[in-house]
Image 1 (cartoon, rainbow, N blue to C red):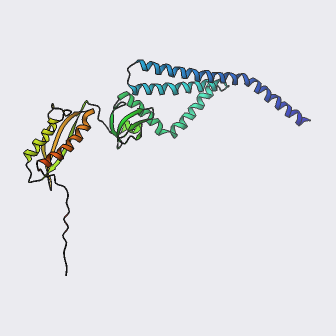
Image 2: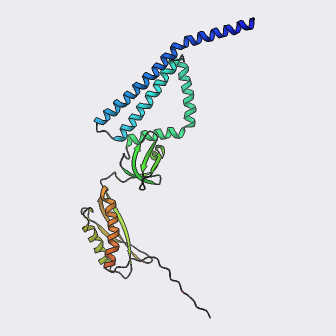
Amino acid sequence: MDKLENYRKHIDLAIEWLWNLVPNLVLAFLILVFGLWIIKFINKAVAHFFDKKDYDITLERFIQSFIHYTLRILLFVLVITQLGVKTSSLIAMLGAAGLAIGLALQGSLANFAGGVLLLVFKPFKVGDFISAQGIDGTVKEISIFQTKLNTFGNQVAIIPNGQLSNGSLINYNAENMRRDNFTVGIGYGSDIKKAKAILLDICQSHEDIMKDPAPEVYVSELGDSSVNLSLRFWASNENFWPAHFYVIEQTKERFDQAQIEIPFPQQVIHRTETN
């Protein structure tokens, strides 16, 4: 009888505890549902606000991500508190969890800090063509933890922000125009002045190659098998690559027409006949 009485007592206590917990559960569920709706509404309002303003797209996406995750963390705290967890205990628990997570995710925190630095100092923006960490590509997206690049082959390269903020990079769109340095070798028996004149005429014939600053040609090196000429010309960022490939193609065609030799490695094989 005593055991049966104890079982009944525990069951009654459990039912009473659940009965007292039901209102908190219901209220916590309503807070969760209403909070998610509020967060969705705020996210749409922020996106609508940025649509009307001409802010940097990198800043817009970063702020939207930050607001989204911050509101979700606050909602989680409200729901947990409603379930009866004391605020002081919750803070202590979050502090301990934060320390453990921070030690486990040092790289992610470094990437987050790198994202903040990229946002503040703006070494590049979405749409810029950059070279970083051995990867060349157009910046597609800058998020809190990583940056996405579109490469020449239309692949998506993902680089952690921590590496971008701490490493060296080249932003080819930082200025409105770029200078090309095209080197071509001619034979030692070829006319240097004639070759230089042809290279300058090629630049003059292309409308996308800037005339000011004017193109320049120099003898840059007396190589083992060629006299190397260095052609330097300027073009706007959007016209740089078409101009670059045009100069290469025209140089080969015009040098062939003028009978100017472009040396290339050759291998001579001597055959020895034996009786």
